[in-house]
Image (cartoon, rainbow, N blue to C red; front, top):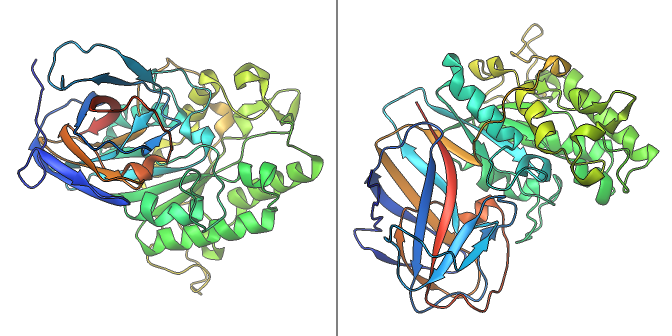
Length: 407
């Protein structure tokens, strides 16, 4: 089937990306079944930026070659990179008025460090496939807005490692039709930035408050065991346990999450709950799961959480005095999960459609002239990688992006 579709910008095939700006394509008529893989091709003109906006943790190959072969059936694999460039999102128009999105917000554990190249087996991928296979949640799309190596706390501008607080507006609140949020964030703050439980909990409260004010139900993910990691200590383990206790036992009436997903419990070493299960540990670092561990995590999420909404949407935390008011927060018995078949999923997903709107961005150095055939949105959102490949002159980039197109 020929799916070669030309993307235009204000009716033109050629557009310019200004530094630190985003561009959004015209709407196109394009159909794709649920859990599809899309190939996005970009041909660069004569002005190629010396540094490229991209996502270092894609764990999916992009392909590059010289000359304009954007519509060629066979692509000569001159260069291959396990990263994404420029593209960050695809907005999909749908007739389903009940379509919604859930943002998974976090660091490398949500970004997928330890997964298999090109296999799309992050925990978010497993989760997204399960949503698609469960009738009450087929209308829910998954947006993976994680960036490896980042901290939850921080508001300063960091292009390569943007902090959670700083990017929350852009990567969560500004995303299309977001109604749910899962925050699995804070391990880098504890291990490498010397933040304590109080600082992390206070930041959770800020983000929960912002989510509620924007109509988003917020769920917290417990931080995985890390005691065998070289950066760990007894004091840091104490912080982790206090944070997880707060996530699971604090009512949204008191500024807590609307519910929790206990990722930590099923990932424990059976002989020591402060250790990550060694059978599910990537490179024995005591911190990151491997693809089997991510499948356990993806199967941990209670899908019925995404058939409920918080009672506190639009309400500022700690300002209500309604004595009996409770939200639909639910604790998940994560240790009851079973491992199932590894499935193929993605870093971002959107509801099914016949029309699609795509955008791209550049926030580094030179203006670049581009011609596109299937594009996406604001790659700054997906994480920022700065590289300087000297051979990127008059070349085409084929960007493999895997998205979910749900009913």
